[in-house]
View 1 (cartoon, rainbow, N blue to C red):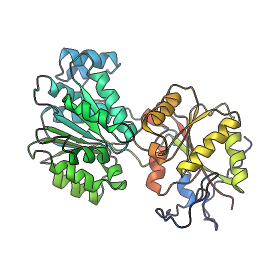
View 2: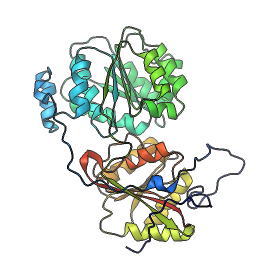
View 3: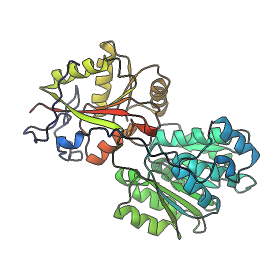
View 4: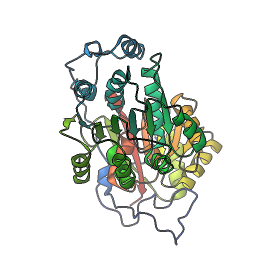
Length: 404
């Protein structure tokens, strides 16, 4: 390999690479969140070579009291044995209990709440009956896709309520009274304020990636949404972490909840993590190109700091003979979905992204995560690295820093 790595824990004097994104400068008059210093040693982790302890579920999917149509769709998806969160949460959700699920992304929690919800919806006449709130458009889209697959042929309908797409179409879809509304807090609040979305009769609330929604400043929106719902409801609350803020939320929103924790270590034991030192911006680009030309870099997520920098970097990779797609906040929803689809379907093997893609996206078989720009916080780093090494597979993560 033509790039040099040093495993050393000494802090470096200059700012970490990433304080400016490739090709762009921050406007000195615009103050964004201050980037927290992360010691380079935090970006280094030797993957643990060990026999994975296989979770032994108490149930098979055939043991759950699902109807024939749902069972057929589960079999069609190839599901036989549930994951830990599915195995432990589904029975409680079926019983109608409030549930706090603490689980890493990529552990199958979407199916853990969707399957019992779909079973419960059969025979329900009140519509809409279920509200699912997710932090990002991409995660909401994935939940909607999984709902459609699991409910195929069952006469159940969902509506996706997210920003970046035509609100008039969403209003029309709501008037058709879908069984399930899946959305992001901002657009849901907008439609609530317009009195288009009515929550007073809904029986089930799902808050997915609750910690991420707090990080993104959605707490006031979530409070407004919850206040519009009946007190007599089932609430399912999923988070990767349990912080004092999360505990306060659960105390307010849930009644006698069952807590299920299947969280594993902060970053996957299967993810080998290291740093790459670069002399300057030009050297950094050269090293990245050198890495991406390696055969082992089969499916790579590259993270940048700003929308402008991510687009410039993706364009530069394309011009250098490495086809890539970009996903960031300046792209509308359909453009973001097309970029993700190209990456998922292996039409490009590099996806360049801002942190909008760092959390909640289920992209199978990502072999490498490269932090071209360092993240704002260590928690963001954990979520980025969590895109690889999923389902017990080994993954690699590299973070660029200034040469010391």
